[in-house]
Length: 410
Image 1: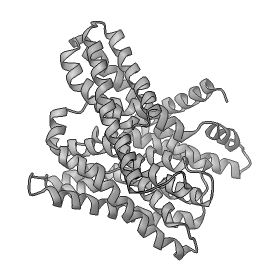
Image 2: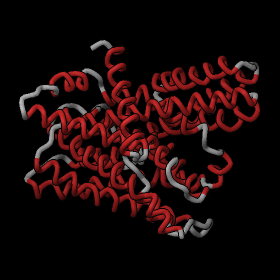
Image 3: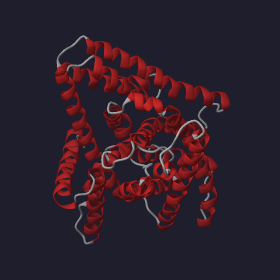
Image 4: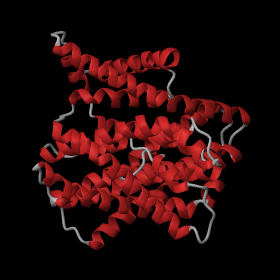
């Protein structure tokens, strides 16, 4: 299908879903849009059972566009930049140890807890997969999703320090999660020699390299912005930074997500303050807010509609339901461990462990990573249970986090 036609269909569906949610359902935007996407999918399935075949053309549309590729190498860079430019770098610096611990050690610990537990759960359903594939599921479900989390933060009021922890972790841990996922997939498919040295080098290349590269492209964009006083040109420069920077990072085998987050922090703080007029700041904020809202609308409707092309069995659904408390339990342990290790040097908000656990939403990135796996039984299982966890995370956690925060912080 022509890419313009596919985009036109998605933007039309997203616009109609946004209208319906705003006028009638009145849920938080991302949650409402995904609910509508799910309702559409279930409605199409129901109509197909009655002989009205809307399912085939929609399946062709969804199969014709690679969700993982579209998100990881298209939409994600824009969404990360739009989120990063809103983060106060001074607030983030105060929480750097917490964010770094959660984004690295927390992801790795969750990966092994979830993967190991899943390995022993599967035989109960007469399923058996290599331990490495269980760890792969742990790696893709471990990081919180910055898109879902940042959209959630807009709807709730939490102490500034806690908001920075949640947002900062979500912006950085997806990059770490992708590195861990990549290492484990490499082990699973036997691509090249895998040892401790190679793993450390890959982490340095991807994560540390992403930080360094992000500083470099962010500084270059900053210097160019200083020499211009035209908001249209300056917004175009930020677009080039996001598109070109992400693409170049991929070619250099460094983490594009981490690079764009770092560049976004530089532009959002120093660039806005030292290289832009008030007029440019206003237009820049409005432009990236609009980009954020449009792409979020498309993404969450898309997530809801993806159910049409997933393989579900009763066992897969039950395992997915078991994976929900498993993932939350692993998240709680990783957050508790990080806070316990750092509480001697800083104060934490009351009930921070519970709030960080419940507020750690999974979203499109987990689904995209699952869909990137090679076809096979392991992929079908991983995609199905990932989808169940993500739907629960966005719908249940997303809808209840506000009341939980109000109850636990009082």
